[in-house]
Amino acid sequence: MKHLLAALFLTLSASPAFAADMVRSYSYYTLDATTLDELSKQFESRGPKVESSGHKHPGATRMQFTTHTTYSREPGRCRVLKARTVLKVEVILPRWRPRRKPEADMRIIWDTLASDIRRHEGQHTDIAKNYARKLEQSIQELGSADNCAEMAVKVKKTTASVLDEHDRAQQQFDRVENINFEDRFQRLLDYRLQRMEGRQSREFGSPRYHH
Image 1: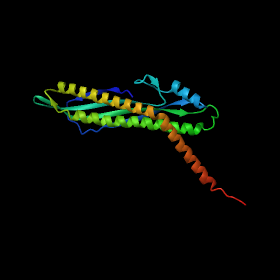
Image 2 (image 1 turned 180 degrees about the vertical axis):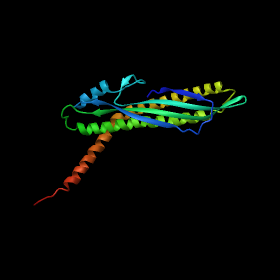
Image 3 (image 1 turned 90 degrees about the horizontal axis):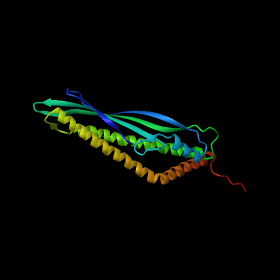
Image 4 (image 1 turned 30 degrees about the horizontal axis):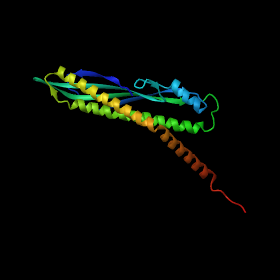
């Protein structure tokens, strides 16, 4: 998912050691379909629009990277003293509230689909967390420059480079997921059905035969 360009807060005073941090929130949109066909159409009409694709999706994860950079000024030199990247994540998920009794098997289909959407968006969050740490580390390893204005330019270029790499990683993940969706969903659905059958067998016990 497309990131929001990180803001850089530049100071020249010493500060305590920083570590990448994350703030996560959730929001929901409602689906009231009672058939699989209706559900598919509502995903397309009600789902969140993703900037990178220009299309609406069943779920989305919006990310904002904010980097606080602290500098140390020395005679004729400036270097990064500390860097801290804060990742803000908003996960947008569907919520199913059928307006009337749904078709048979819709519940198991929905549960399978909703679980896969949550997993997918969770993976997007994990990718972003990894790049938040990489951004922080990359800035801290920049070395020094003749002055802090020059150092700030190096920080800005490094930030842009790491976040571009992050976007490519997110897009590659989506491409792989889209290619494998049908096979993955069928396996998940089969697994859930097998578990249901197993529970039913345990509830009713082994069949008995009378002669």
